[in-house]
Structures are given as structure tokens and as C-alpha cells.
Image 1 (tube, one colour):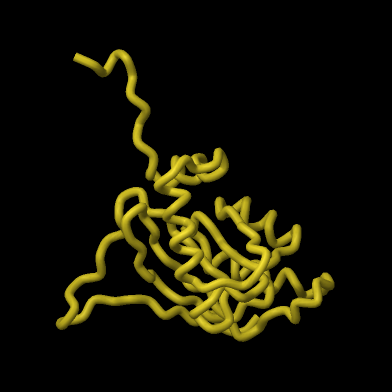
Image 2 (cartoon, rainbow, N blue to C red; image 1 turned 60 degrees about the horizontal axis):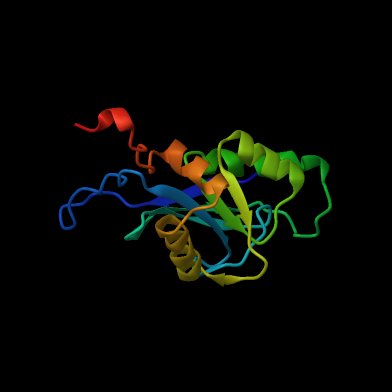
Length: 165
């Protein structure tokens, strides 16, 4: 696999320090070819746009780019693991990954890295993905997302009868 390139936001004298990750924010990765749309399969994604998403806002954390990607044919290749592992490593710390498609071995590696893959049936803008994620956070999240939120520290402790005065 070729080199992995990361574009991260860093502090400078004009813009000040980079904000800390908001408490309880979900770190969301989006498979993209152009940094505008969710439009790539996991194995063929040249880039991943990584955002921190809360109920109120989102912010770009970094973009990760890869030179060596699969051809989207869906055929398993002997050297395929050499393409999967660096991508999983680069996405560590993310809670969710949105992509058009993902193979079973890749999904298993992501899940074992505590990254929940989500397949989207057709391309859509990154903004639409982030807005939909916020809607899920604001409303009643499905059980799998509640588990992810708990791991991210985004859920409030349920009130206990013993906590009342």
C-alpha cells in the first residue's frame, strides 16, 4: 500500500488553537473520492473525511488520503489485506464509517476496531450525511447507535431514584 496522507487542522497565530473534541461528539468518517460527497466503497475510497458531530454542530477534523485502492470489482485479492489494514488503522478513533459498500472481512476489521460501518444505498452529499447523523442524535437513536453513543461518552446517565433529594 502506498503512503497514507493526512490533512489535519493545526493551530496557527491567526486562528488560535484547535478546538478540543466536544464532549460526547461522535467521530464520523465518510468514504469519498472528492471530499464533497459520500461516493465510494470502503476499499476503493481514495479519501475519508473525518468529522466530529454533536446534536448542534459538526466540524471537519481531518482528511485521510490513500494512493493504493481497490477497483470496486468486489473480487477478493490476495493482497487485499494490505489495503484494508492501513485504512482501518487510519480510522481508529472514529465511531461511525459511512460508505456505499463494504466487504465482510473489511467490516469485521472495522467492528473489531470499534468502528461501526454504515452502508448507504446511493451517493449523497457529505452535508446530507452529517445532517442525518444529527437527526439520529436528536431523536430516539436506534439501539446500535445508543451503544456507540455510550462508548463515545455522549449519553447522559439515566436518573436514579436514589439521586433525588
